Image (cartoon, rainbow, N blue to C red; front, side, top):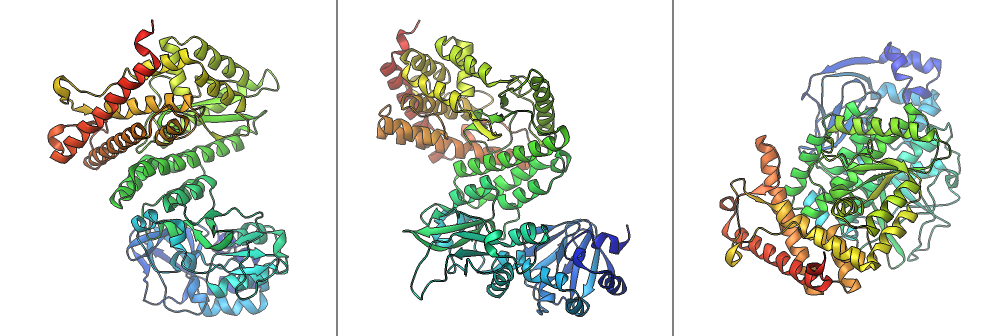
Length: 609
């Protein structure tokens, strides 16, 4: 493809007139860069506007990746803004073919090409300004703080009567990537809650892509109402919030007043393997094949977060949030090819993914529920399930050996309702195993309302016989304690999943159902059990600490296996642990053992036939 044909297919060159395209053709330069080659450096000099034709480049600050750009994306915007010294390093991520124009030629185009010039005003190009605005802080520091502590400046406000051009100029002047919209600008000490938010992404997608001009009223393109979070929210929770909603700006409030805006870049700033970078990779993928290295990417992210001392159970929730985004993206890609679904459906996950307690990718646990409008709908969803399960295999999720996948579990809602009733009313071993699996269900994608299923599951908590049987099934996995409560170790080591994690998971599921709740992680279910009176506060704390300790120990062990290229498992050897860790592991096993015995006695498990 001719260079000009390529450029005019992408903003801002798509806004050029025929005369402008001729001028670009006259001054355009072609450059090549091999993988790892620096294109320009922070503190050096750059006088060009660059466009990626082939390959990709990464933007770095202090040796850490902050963004990655591919074909059609531009960089070197500080040069156009009149700054000769870049504020970041640009390095070829892969072999690159690049186009560049001297800033003098770009600026010369502005006079006769107002729509081309408007792009630089409106897009704010401030992808980089947003990423480099403020002092660098480590990921570990960020995620251990509350979200309010990350606010580095007061919010930038514009009135509802402003135009898009007004907002863009304000964003450019303030070097921010969003503005909050208020009904009217406040007095000196007045504090208002916003009625809308406008981001640089909105300017690209809702203004430029829609062919709107700078005179467009901001009220037409802003997002409204504004979702805010409280300043006390832990930063790790805030990152999960952003990942789940696939948004990049988070307004923060305290006592009914807005404090400022935190971006996903603030949370994962300067972190090469951060969740934000992986989310962006998911969003950009045009096929499952483009995410063939997803499992390794997740492992790298987990390693980075762990080294940054992020709470291991929080890491599990971040992995689950990214997996949710991945599944949703794969589903959207499939819907484009197979055609829109003929009726409402819900793609669900269960097991550790349903509880948001995965660290490394394990085998698939998913199913499909739909509400048919015609007999032919089943054939569509059978093809749909085959496609998604196959795509998940391509990105690193192995098939489930037990067959718990949508290719085998794909049925109308009415079938699922009857299935759940049978499991609850006839609690034989096979039914209990399935109930325990599917009671962890969580909807990841789809518009089908699963409230009828939720009612059936929540009603199970009132059936004492079923709860007792479920508790007995949960206690089939027990801590490996022998005579005098010594830890029993096999030649393969101690299975932390079977001996600690799953026993707590099973107990927490029972306690939460007794309390009339179902959803949530194991730790949240334990809290529900305490609130509902099924578990003492001391018992809840003991089980929670045992779970956290075993989860962290397993994560550390699995990271070591991943780094060494060994198969990842759940087993550790006592002689590989420090004396303190061996003592704590024994205490965790004892706590689980005591709570299993107390629960069995309370529910009369020993009296079951």
